[in-house]
Length: 328
Image 1 (cartoon, helix red, strand yellow):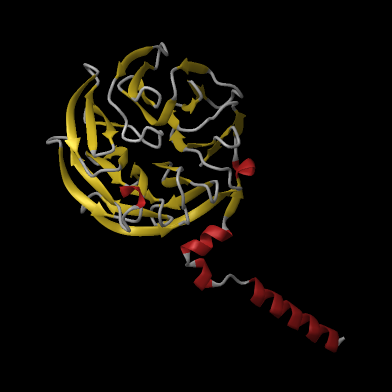
Image 2 (tube, rainbow, N blue to C red; image 1 turned 180 degrees about the vertical axis):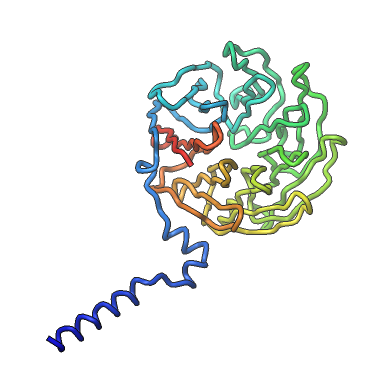
């Protein structure tokens, strides 16, 4: 019996030593990404199937609008089908909800559409041009204006919603496609289309319509978000997310999530930063630690992400023809 007990104790000791997490690995954000994987089907409150090509999202109250082929569709929890549909030509890019309207680009006619959120009627079509006619762009709203990058040579256009007219065109770095508003400024990413090892983010002061900072980041920065204490940009050329401190315009973190390639999206909300990528379905970044808190799987191709109603995360996949929603 003593011999058996000794063998048993040895086995238990070996088991416990093997089961203990490696603290070095746990401190590595890239390893955390591998360790904390959550199946999206397990987390989701809803998985809404949409025929067509459901892609970019606009947060609007308790739900989201999703761009699709020739239309926008509004989704809310509790309905497996869209609760509203707006027909428009080739909606593309990440639009915005502001000034009682949806503001959405049309790739086919290179214009910005204004849609009344109450009547769902198109109230204005503003012929702006688009810096990226393929639609990998985003619209921003703030400081009483709507902002859109309209020329690949480097033009940020400011639109007055009281007149639906262009009131300013601001020279910025070329190959800039995505805009965000936050911390009293407009922030845009300068991709360089991958021809430079380092891209940049520019800060524009809406009081003067002037670029006040150009901040080097990673390679091919594209989609950008402002919130949760920082400005965040996906660097598609090196697979990182860069965090900028808006108080100093300095880079304070580079988070390695391997988000290589085109497409994807980024947003903030519910105390987190959310990155939609192709190598995983969704990354959840903790802005307190600048590390990946959770990774949602499996990969679902490309798509978008937004947070609505405070803590409901919506994420799309045009390859899976599905939009998921889950509560943070």
